[in-house]
Image (cartoon, rainbow, N blue to C red; front, side):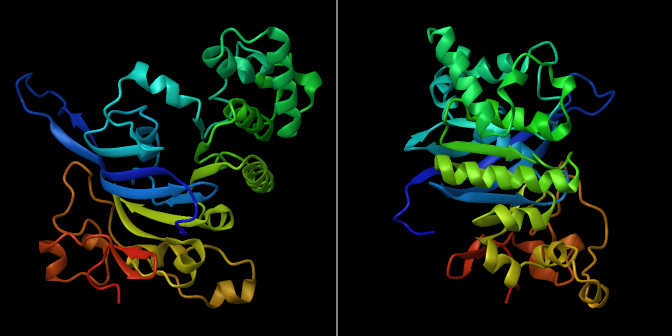
Length: 330
């Protein structure tokens, strides 16, 4: 990433852990530590999209919620425009929340069923600018509804009257009404039909270009992530396996886990799809409460050797800006 662009966010050695108490354990028994996010570091620049991919339970959503301080941080830094957010209290974070907004996975569940669409979209304005005149609030809401492809005359309708795709547009409008600098998209299209997914992704890309947004885009679908992302980070069991420009990562994946994920992406050409080699990941995902020693992927890795059990590979530069955490990536 060119240094000419402004760095908005810098996450350094971020750890998020949860205390897990065994069922039926005595009150004095020490809880076990679930390492949901383990020493994750990355930078985000103005106008770019960082895609985050990985299996369910790898820590993608936990990382996103930790960045905006919806979850407590064990250790590490979350430097937003030069200020570390990690040690801030809830009241101190309030001033930064209008610059960082979130779009959630389930479009209907993220909307209050007792509020009209107009009230839902206006809620951030009421929270951060309580003295704003009602006429100005209504004007901003109707303008934002047009921007995301909703009809202004639907302002007094309720969420259950809309389709899933329309509900996600409402969620996008609510996130954008404050004109933030960063939008975190936590699997925003996974609950939608394929055709609607494309519409929502294209809308986000148009709005990013129009409003100069930066995005963190979390998804399971690697083809969607490739389409929208500038760079891609691959997570496994709370650890970064690979981080690279989107084209570099797809053209030359270096980590065995990334190679397996990309090999599973469907190709629209039936002949190529039938003849391609698919790398199968054997075994079950280890428990984050008791992760493997050394490299966390070694128990399922076809390249694993004794060194992998003894030493945890650091995230090093393999070529250019391409980073990979593997002893044998070459």
